Image 1 (spheres, one colour):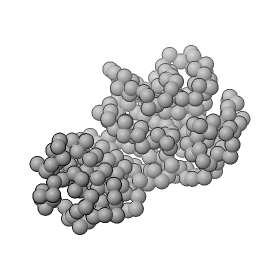
Image 2: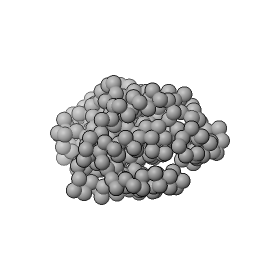
Image 3: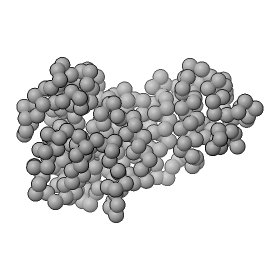
Image 4: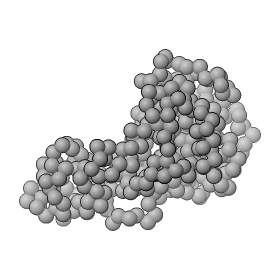
Length: 300
């Protein structure tokens, strides 16, 4: 399920939103001299710094963090959003891979007992350990383009621990997340994310909002795990198997693509038009198909 909304969101800001489009950077490093600390934007991390005050204020004023919330900030950068989040919620865990920025954050918030810094790759973080005995996680920040999809799927494995997630991504990725059936953007990522979450594309962020400027537009998206789910419960792996097979050769009909999942003599039992293509089915159709998958891939 998707929805286009105006911003009511949680999201990383300013240097937190270190945008990740490495191909757009003119050199290996770019000196960021408009921040409290001078920092060279590292190409290997795809760092582009959000500088547009209007965008920053729009994000910050829309967050409305509250006391005792468990906030997780991915890519805090130089802490433009970290401070207001920490002041409002009382505690915040920041995840930063850049060792220089991590050192700056550690020094800056040394006197803040509610600040916790994880220095390292977000893909290595055990999110379950961050929610022990605390409120549901609210995860915000920038997702590097090269890890955005695997990280999103990893976070879905912990959706029962998560209240919501608000991220900046390349616009094309957000469009894929929010796309509906029949759209060229609709695909595996759309189906899987919409099965697990309400997807709200909040607003676009143009290239000129960053220094250095990326060559693509960005967008803010909010992902809210369904509670309760609008879909019947199915095995997540079965759903993933069906969706992957269907979209693996998206120009072919389901009659051809679903042979990889269902036995030939059972294809006629499937509750969909096999003459259609993968992009013609809704999430509910894929849920019905997944319910027919047994561990060995045969129809029940």
